[in-house]
Image (cartoon, rainbow, N blue to C red):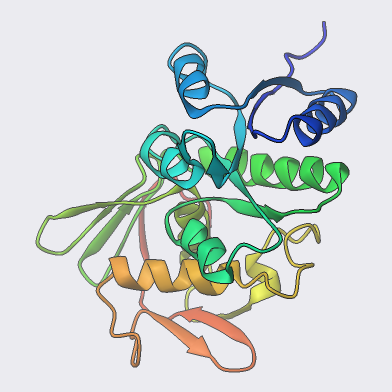
Length: 242
């Protein structure tokens, strides 16, 4: 019996690029559906849940980033944003800050798109195995299964899939310095680009949700020249294998 193919949605109005991506993903064992307009993408999304989406930032009928934040993050569907070569770096950082799992800059190799999609899917599948894990630190509670971070006063903050993965990695090894490379996949697909400081962006986003002073964080500390350390004591309440 053959396993069911993972479904990839591609929202891209460049017909030539879209056709190449469809062909490459299907050659590598994925099923694909492609869309040139947000309205068609959203209509289909209401019927079928894909494994992952590739979304261009600029589309004829709106902003792809808005789709990634408003629809895909809310449904915990992993998303890779596609940006033009002249897109401002701040736009790409904004995409990561708002919950995108990765990005591609045009022009890029179709095989790179497949490799990055596979890496994002591996991370997402790994985080799904944390469904029964709950941990506490300094009065905070993290439910990795529901993607919820609860403040000491009971207020709940939603975490994106990428934030869950990063926080889980940090909290699994408290009081240990972790390099940026250790916090990436470890498979070499995400750490290759000179711009790729996505870990720094995600750390900053986590600190904001933790109410940290960026100049003097006490929970996630920067170890200059090396990486980051989760400084608080962690208590695992259920499901964690030491």
